[in-house]
Image (cartoon, rainbow, N blue to C red; front, side, top):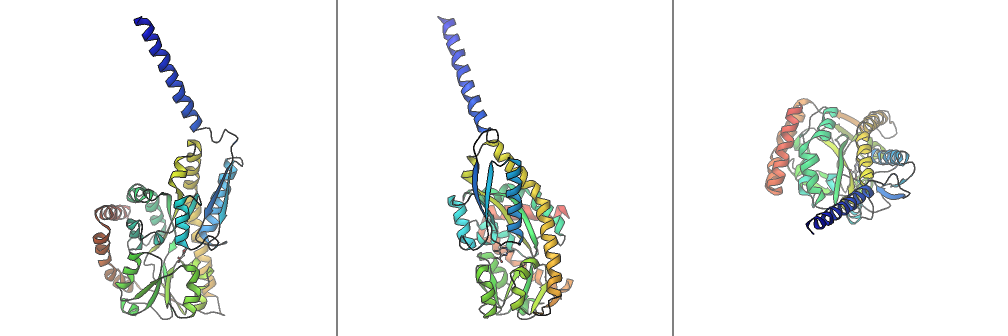
Length: 350
Ligand code: 6CS
């Protein structure tokens, strides 16, 4: 009797084990199976611009590596609404992948607003990208904050240093006094410009060209490639090489969607997003260099390019420092810890 019970226990254990093994096995058969995966990937930019070209390259690599099992349709900015609408689509699963700028999630993931702080990163773009790749503050702690909203950042990467354009030279904080500055949708970005005395307005970039042309706003910030490709230089007389910040983009997926994928597909996505880090860096560097030349050589729409001196940048850095306290006060304890850890990581990297 005792022997029978033991035998029964053994049989039951073996059965349970085999069920677990089969279950685990089926979790990792995505790439061996017949199934095809058809996903949507929305970007905040258009053909020829960094985010769109990045997304296309990532989609092509995943298609090739999966022998055609993974098919991703990449969407340009515009067709699926504003940048904020696109974030909502990602959260609801209307699209599986998105490139998201933290500047459009500021009212939701308040901790992500740290990217709005001026003069936080270094002046060395390669080092900045390395920090974005390796930072625990970002890749673990900030990522957890996004995941609470069904957004899973797989990579933080830069589209280049940010520059100001304006209808006037902007070389000292006082030049921003009463200046109508366009910003993305994030309280801390607004606050950063209020610290210089500006009068900032949130706008989608889809409305920016006309708003600059009509004087609804007088200036804006963006990497050089974007200023040229979106033709903002046509309706702005000055471009300041201010490098007051870096433009950060996030490659994101819907968290629930990703969690439900077979593990080998998850691994393939993570591996390919990792491979894309240097590709994205080279892409933005090339486009920023080429399009700076294009602005310099544009006689039809001349733009005066003013490179801020070290002393001018220092005056802005000092004026921007109190915004860090505002971030800490407004965003709370977790945000404070993430920011402090990131600052330590940046200092250590230097
Ligand atoms: O200024 C903006 O809002 C846009 N700038 C860039 C570089 N990418 C997309 C974003 O929406």
